[in-house]
Each structure stands twice: as C-alpha cells, then as structure tokens.
Image (cartoon, rainbow, N blue to C red; front, side, top):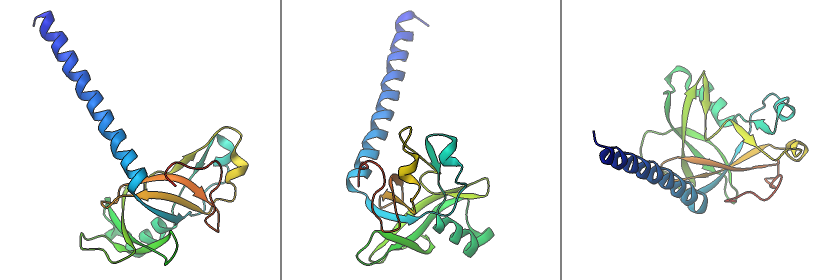
Amino acid sequence: MSERAVRWLIAVGLALVLAAVNVSIWRNESLLAHGTLLSLELAPVDPRSLMQGDYMALDWAVAHEARQRYGERLPRAGAIVVRREAGSTRATLVRLDEGGPLAEGESRLAYTVRNGRMRIATDAYYFQEGMAQAYVRARYGALRVDARGRAVLVGLQDADLAWLGPSPAGK
C-alpha cells in the first residue's frame, strides 16, 4: 500500500471518529435542551460513597420496584413507563414498556440490567471536590428524557425537589 493511500485512510478514519463524537455531543445537547424533566426517587445506597471520592453512588426506587414487580420476566434491556405527578416532575413506575402509545404525563425510560441491578441513565453523580455536604440531602435524581427513553442525569434534588449544589445544566 502506498504512503498516499495510508495517509488517505488515516484522514478518513479521523474524519469518521470526529463525526461520531460530534453527533454524540449534538444528541446530548439536544436532549438537555428539549428532553422531558423527570425527578426519580433515589433508593438508599451506601452513604460511604460520598466519602470515598467526589461522587455519590446512585440507585433508583423505580428500579427496585420494577425488579420486585417483574422479577425474572424483566428483560436485560428495555424500557419502563413512568408517570409524572400532576403539576410536578416527580415520576413513578407504571409498567414495562411494550411499545404502545403513552398516556398523558407518561414517559419511556430506557434501562439495562448489569450484575443483577437495573441501571437507568447512570449509577453515580460526580461533583466538585469538597462539595459532599451539599448532596447529603439528595432524595431525587433529575433526568432529561427523550421520546425513546434515553436519559441524562442533570442534577440532584432534595425531598421538596429543590436543586442541590450549583445550578445544573439542563434544569
């Protein structure tokens, strides 16, 4: 293979990688700007995660409820349907998603099951060093969710859905 062909292949490969990265950034920015805001109750996790580093381990109450309700019938990957409370962003589990139409106030929420745990969006919230005390009162994780159920965690909230820590992006 000639040196010119190798350079051309490298340039094409680099262009493809850059295009993929930019598409991913654009999708996440679009989700932050236009996604539905949902507040999901956090399930209890090991409080030591706040002290082990600059992150908080997350688990979701809807994930626990889905595992209890559906057990072994829960697919390893899929979506659940959650419903927002009237006049609130607080959301609770309704059912497994079977691809049908959603009712008013309902949203799909994609998940995967890894190591026996249902993972929604993320299982950790990273914050600035020294800010652990700002997140001790966290009771809800705020997510932006698109129509397909893809979610991005945008911040943590207390029991009254007040934002904790610095003002999050996409709130």
